[in-house]
Image 1 (cartoon, helix red, strand yellow):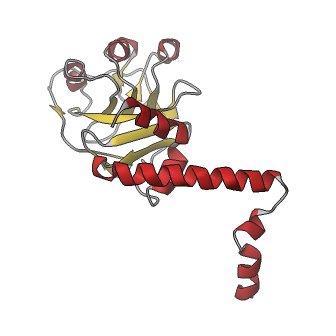
Image 2 (tube, one colour; image 1 turned 120 degrees about the vertical axis):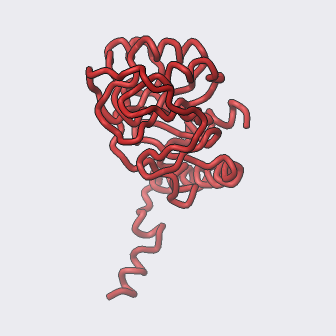
Length: 209
């Protein structure tokens, strides 16, 4: 898939892609969007850190490809700062589309000034070790979702959703169809119609009574 497709998914947003995917793929944890107003989508570059250790994040910078979403996880999610502004500067310089951190981030003011889209489970000053190289390009679980290299991660103010790369063509088609339906619905609502009637809920209520 090319960059245009990822931009299209980012603009569609997490909620729309989640619904288009059959309500699958939701990263079901509360995430903080550190740079307000940002949204992103791209193929995952998975970084499986050792517990409380960011050695693997440093390794990942050497293999990062432009447009990828870095996904950082460790065996047990904890409020330990896996990245701050220096690692995020590297990620930006080497073309990362965004970063999803199932741990903590620090240097938040500097991160916001940098502007790279970042979503994190926590903000904490406590830093990580650099003692264990961890693993790259292996599946990790974040918020109940298994994320593999190349799976598409979509992020916005609502959170994150993951689309397995094998499902992407179908989900993309369904996303486009849903956006078209929503555009038509929006026009009807602006014209004064009620969702109560458009969805047939008035008749459904009558049948249920």
